[in-house]
Length: 236
Ligand code: ADP
Image 1 (cartoon, helix red, strand yellow):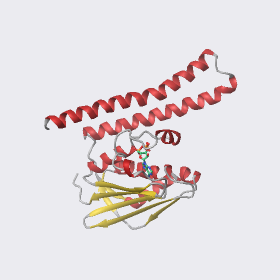
Image 2 (cartoon, rainbow, N blue to C red):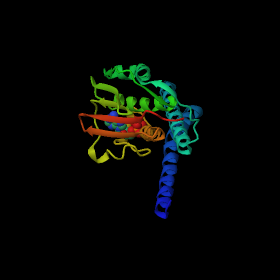
Image 3 (cartoon, protein in one colour):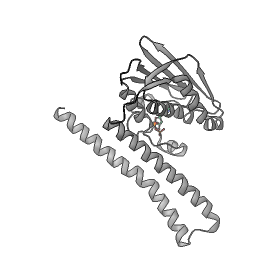
Image 4 (spheres, rainbow, N blue to C red):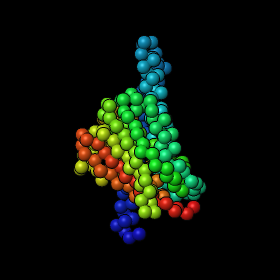
């Protein structure tokens, strides 16, 4: 590593720590404030249900955030057990569709997969996390009655996974920033619909862990396409 690279890494590390502290402190401050109001008796009895609901929601947000940070640091360390196995991508995607079906039906989103039996040799837990994050976004940032389409196919000695949505899209100016840690296009909107801003950086790390590549194409107001390419013969 040359000096400029070292300085850059240090800057990124500092920015990450300051973002983490901020992101952890916000929900904790809300939790503390509400718990204090209940505890001191200031909260009216009719407000207690709302307050406790917020305490639960913010606690869940914290847990999600901490899980994401732990996953990122594990990937950074690269010390995850390199357990590779044969994964049937189609059944894995169907399983993820199933667990996201409730959020999809809230927006009446149609999820479709072009079936084409493809299996890859990779780390199951990481590939699950990668596909879950992208598919969750494809629903979260979609429009009512929108569509999510997944195509998986073999291409030379690679596997290509194409996930497209008919959602709000990503402004061109931000396209190369969405994989940054904590980057969110619209912070207030993202806060409303939930999210840590870490999902896509985890996705990128997982793709790189498997020596693959990821590309995004998007048009604001029209939708987004995420294209992941994974090499087929990963050696454990
Ligand atoms: P978040 O937890 O906010 O969803 P991500 O890292 O998963 O964080 O995504 C970063 C940002 O990229 C999101 O906040 C959103 O602005 C944008 N984004 C990600 N996926 C999509 C998508 N399919 N359509 C539109 N915007 C998206």
